[in-house]
Length: 95
Image (cartoon, rainbow, N blue to C red; front, side, top):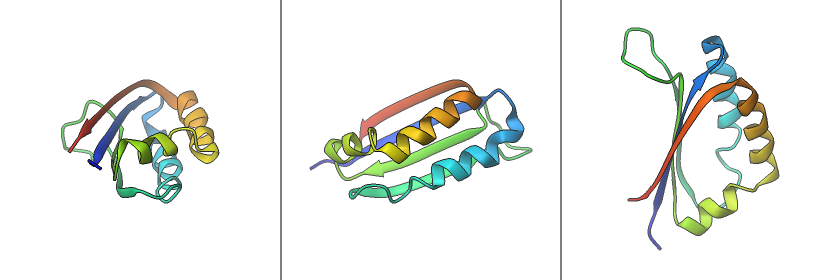
C-alpha cells in the first residue's frame, strides 16, 4: 500500500468563519482507520495566504481515503463547509 496525501484549501465567503471551519474539520480526524496525519491550518495574519483554511492529511492508502470520503459525519461537515466556502481546491497524490 502506498500512502496518499489529501490536501484541500478553501477561500471563505466570510474569512472570520475560519475557526468554525477548522473545528468542523478537526472533528473528522479519527473517523476511519488508516488516517496517518490530519492537520488543519487557518490563515495567519502577516503571513502570505491565498486561502483561509487548509487541510493536509495523509491516508495509508487510496482505499483508506475512499472510505473517509462517504463517511456520514464527513458528508455532514462537507455540507456545512460548502455553505461557507467561496472556492475549494483539492490535490490528492501518492507520497
